[in-house]
Image (cartoon, rainbow over all chains, first blue to last red; front, side, top):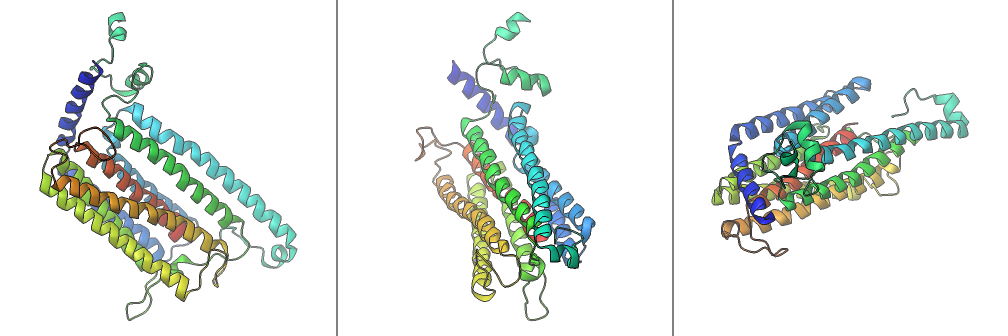
Length: 128
Length: 239
């Protein structure tokens, strides 16, 4: 019973998979090249400050999204699968946020401890 | 209504959110129409996401909290081809090599489902060679940093000591993933060439017969390796 059901769905899947036209992959491929070139350009032309971080993150998210959605076939998966994959990493972002807050605090504490750095240099941004 | 909910593993799968609740409350398999190997690969990839996520989170933590200046990746990874050094050029080339390999892998999966044996084979070989090229460039990068720049996991002449530890840990772990991927790409190109996937020949890990779905599962791993590089490129090399 289970085996026949398995075999049936498998055949359906393969027929669906064949339907993906090759053109989609080439378009995504070109887009990935362009986005990579753009993120390299951010460094090459030495864009700095918030604009740099914004552009880096933007191109990163776009590239990651295209790879997951098309190359890893996520757009053709059922939601049961999509949510199972995407939710845990989103929760992981909470850890990143906590780490970032904690690191800012650590940096501040070190600044207080090494008082001369805090007074003499007063780094405007902790990221450098 | 009652007959509909009673139907075991109904082949009429609902789309969208209703389908999501249906699938997860079906008391059977949650992932309908997904080969078990593919579900397992996704579970592995999610766990791997956590490993790399922890690496990147701890990297950001030390980077924000260190008082020493962070070495400029743009200068550290600059290369000169006779003229003035071009910033970050090696990493840019590595990025393009890996994206190209991701493209050939995506095509290999597609031609696999078309049961086009030889095109699939050559695309897998191309992917493996591009992956090997990437690892080769990484070896070059590592030896340049170790022998010429004197970067060590516990310190370096350019600035914050954590630069070295993060660099070796993160890129080393990623390079290890690429290397394993290259090995499996060669194994599967052999299996494709020998017709193991057409003849449903039994694999060496399993009693199940070969199937072109295995190429898609291998593809998931390979695209994931590319995906991780996207994040490393952004956070470590460009930030």
